[in-house]
Image (cartoon, rainbow, N blue to C red; front, top):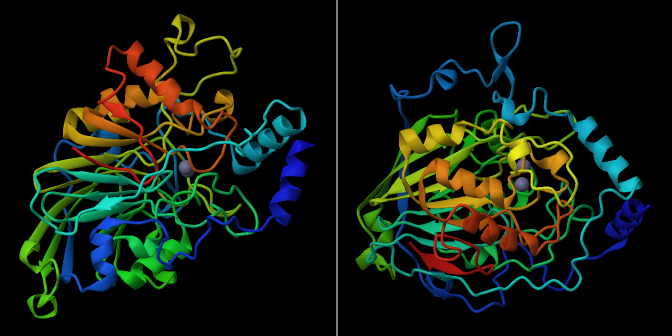
Length: 438
Ligand SMILES: [Zn+2]
Ligand SMILES: [Zn+2]
């Protein structure tokens, strides 16, 4: 019955005071580039994207397109997880909804009380100048959204969702329990927007439209099948990519339009980046009829001598229902298959300077483990992908599942300790809005 009570509250509720219009400037004091953009013009760039021939070392299953489900004429009609770690046949949308509803009705699945939760927040500290640092600068904007500034001057935004709810409508669905770090209008100019998949907590129609409007030269990188959705949304600067596909992304400064820009002195003439679409273990869908019709992906971006691997949203193993006090990484579960795709990514393209790895939305494990990593899975993914350092994402923003919303950072420390990794300084969590250098 709690489910229906929650549903009723969702219908009746109004946006909280923290909600802001997507384009409206934030009341949070922002330092660096955002403050500069509010008052002065920044250097203007145009870009070109070239998708590259498949590299010779791409795993055979990817080269053969084993994750494509083909129709009668050989065309791709949807995508699938090929590894046993996802389960033989991941549940359909109806089956998942049925299981969730039943678990709600029987009391086996209770969403956490977020009314007293206070996730630490900080004011983002974006760079004003594009260059002048040899470090990666990464700012967590809540959930899976990260803005990464590369030493080359490139700025990449991952999975931007700035609305109060991650849902088809803004009057129903999970609401933020931590306010957004800043408004979309506070961001510095963005060159590339990378989208992991179509779920509402990762892809917002309102946010991507607003971003394209504010950044007319920004290019969107998406998984196969999503390009038409972007074009239908009025966004034509979009490239869809398959797993293990690389693209060269080159920015050229427009000298005439950059004259007098506040960042002109530190705005390079050319910025070059390599963007790669990689596998993960997940699903996709925005309606009840489009499940898995578009590709889910993790991504890597390398530019100016630094690299980021963005995990987006992924599972690692599928675990059965076990009592709450039993460790599903214990000896009895050692033989459960792991998603081998992360080892391939690490072995063939690692190491990465920074991993952005999901650590939340995992309980009940028997229901969500195949598609959402818990912190123990996340540490295994961190090791497999050979990231030098990592930050936890996909937590602290919306209560999508039943774990205590402050549990993921706690379990992350336990998982790091169990793996013999320092509990801080290697794979951390930070405040919403916090900027760190790597
Ligand atoms: Zn998802
Ligand atoms: Zn998600």
